[in-house]
Amino acid sequence: MDEAQDLPPNTLRFLVKLCQAPNRLFITADANQSIYGSSFRWGDVHSDLQFVGRTGILRVNHRTTREINEAAHDYLQISVLDDEASERQYINFGPPPAVRAVVDKTAESQLLAQFCRMAAREFRLGIDACAILTPSERSGKALAGQLSYLGLEATYMSSKELDLGKTGIKVLTLKAAKGLEFPIVAIAGFIGSRFPYMPKGTPEDAIQEILNRERRTLFVGMTRAMRALLVVVPKKKPSDLLQGFDETLWNLGKTTA
Image 1: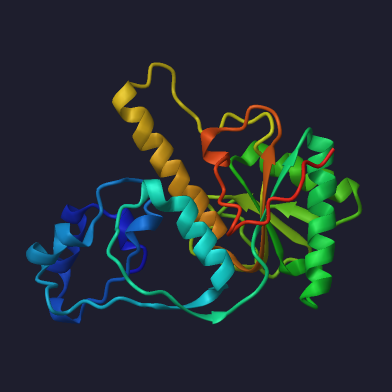
Image 2: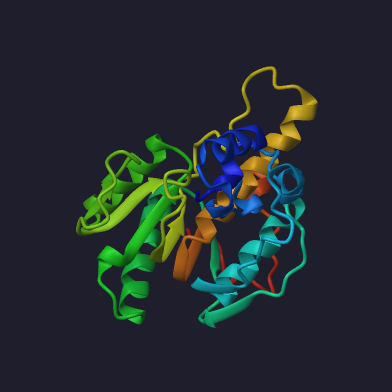
């Protein structure tokens, strides 16, 4: 079972009972990538599932560069679910991830087109290596259309329509990108969007949990990037989730007009 952090402990217990040989069940999970719930912690299931003494931590990161992963983990800190200290090890290294503020959607699409072209050339990859992750289907479809207008082939894909073999830039939501990886990733589409979405009448004690969950969602998006990462934020009234990037870990640059 992969992505076990999105299953409640009772579901895990039920699945163990279904196994003819429960001791042959292999589970992987990263509590900090829990984007559909907040209750998963390894400590909650160790004793009930008798995992004590049979667990291990995967310390070597084979996907992202050290620079991207360290910046993403720093961004996540206040929403961490699993704070078990472990020394992270890396195979790949590269430039620090970038954050850019834009004043409108036109500037955003132009910046994304420039980033995809330059990153693909720098890493000697085709434009097919690029993915743009958005907070919603609506913003994803709009960005795909804008990039196509600028001369770059771009297709919005839902999780059910995902075709990694398709040519051009893949545009999908942050949640649909879970479990995937792309050499070049941009996170964008926040201008004019209701992010994070707060249903009317949300109780005060639930607001912080929504913010924590959406921060973990952004963390998941950041860690889809293998070699290059850009986060595009609105210049005007950005969400608290789109602020506070550590300048020692992120290339903050200047506002794009």
